[in-house]
Every structure is written in C-alpha cells, then in structure tokens.
Image 1: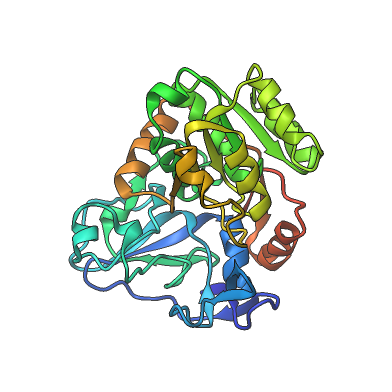
Image 2 (image 1 turned 90 degrees about the vertical axis):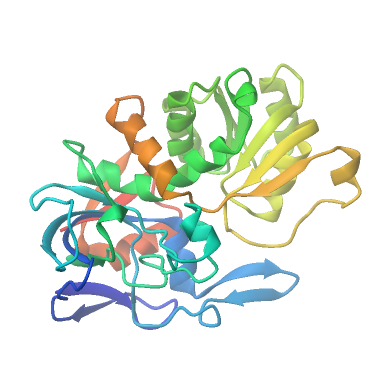
Length: 352
C-alpha cells in the first residue's frame, strides 16, 4: 500500500510502499476515500508544541515514533475484517472516530476515550489516513455516513467534533440567546459557525488576522468579523455586541495574543474555552481570574458519543459543508506546506 509518512520531523513527507495489512481480531481494513489535512498535523510534523517560557513539548518524549502516517480526519470503505469484527458493510462509506484510548481505564469505560492517558489515536500515536488503506481497531469507531460526500464529511472527525465539543461545554442559555466570540476563522472557525447555528446558536463574532479568512467567515454567516491585528480589535468586538462584554469565547487559535483578546472581551463570570494549540504562555494576570470570576477551560477533540450526535446533525441537513479543496494523496506534503504558510481556506482534503 502507498503511504506518505513523516520520517524526519519538519522534513517533506516520504512515500513508502508497504504490504497491505491483514486485519486481525476485531480490526477492520478500510480503503481510504478522504483524509483531511488538519492544523494539528502541523504540530505533529514539526515534532512538538511551544509551551512558552522557552520550553517545548517534544512528541518523541510523548511516545510518538517515526515513521508515522498522519491523518485523523478519515472516511473509508471496508475491504476486509478480522474474524471477530462485525456490523459494517463493504461498499459503504464510514467516518472514522480517531481519538481511541486504551479501552480499559475509567476514562475510556466512561465514554471519554479522547481523555485517555495512554492514547492510541489514529494519525497521532498509530498510523492514520495519509495512505490508501487504514486499519481501525474495532467497528464501533466507524460511523456510517450514508450518501454524504466523503471529502466534506471527513473533517467532522476533528474540526467538526472539536468545535461541537467546545460549544457543548457552554451553557445553552448563553449561546442560544447571545452572541459568542470565536477566535480563528480557519477550518475550525468556519466549522464552528455552522455547528453553532445547527445547535440553535444566536451567532458568532469572529476574529482572525487574515482578510481572506475573515471574508470566508462573513460568507458563512458570522454576525461580525474583526481583524485581530487592529489596534482597536477589542473595542470592535465589544461594539459588535452592543457595547457590552461577551459571556463566552471559544479560542480556536490558542496563542498568547488570541487568549488575551478572548479573556479581555469577557464580562465578569464569563467563560473562555481554549481549543487551539498554537502555543506560548498564559498572558493574564492571575489575580484577574478570581476577581472577574472567569472560567477558563481546555477542550480536546471530543467523545465518540459527541461525534455520533454531530453526524446526526450533519445527516439532518442542518450543517452546511465548509469550503473544501481536494488533492491527490501524492500531494500530501505540498498541502501540508500550504497549510503551514496559511494558504488554505476552509479544509484541504486528500482523496485517492
């Protein structure tokens, strides 16, 4: 099988020819139909995360071994199953839930495998979708997409699920009655606008530093857009909310600048949900967190149950597809480079 692998961090992906794997036990072998290229893939490709204060998190130290096939936003068609696998049909297209845990710890048995301390996430700790075939350890991680387009559905395994889970952490009384602030108008930001609307949300004020992405957010239905590089960005955000601070902000960037802007835009008792992994150190004065009673919560991907709920929304027609550009699997390295340079609007998806 053909796969495009990281063999050295920060270097072009390498085409490696491997023997097609034979599924064992409960495993299912899929023919890859679509694989999204996610911003998280950049951090994996770079080999780590900026922790601020001159520190860096090494993925090698976290157990990520090379060569690695990335790709955690995948739709595929079953072509073979292990002797203990059942419940999926050859010829159908399935969205793959990639945030797989050990399966036995208290977190996993509670249905939150994405929080497992010993993860087996596809495309991160085990091989993913930048290949023409993919092994999934159990049929329960495969969600039938019916007649949905594989290329526009694949991003829901991460960008859709991540934003759905982040919004889900807010009180519906807040997001259904008042605007929320969304920081970042990339693939996650555009997905967040759609999913917020599908969840009955009032709407979003969206911040980015790229005019092209801000226009995409406006086209997607943002209530207002603000360039985060403007010296009066905070004043513009408040003005878009009738001159008042907001009750909730979802930061899909996760930089010191974006989190500071989100924090400052909140009213007393507001909530800041941080999703993005751009990196850096926290910019707030600690005293202001209790003084303003701000709730700061991290959100990492989402559960299998949340992906099932999201896919039901998508199948109902309530979530419009975000802009997607398709590329051949052999363009994986070039697409990753384009994402690194900020030249991707919406989502880039590899199709084979």
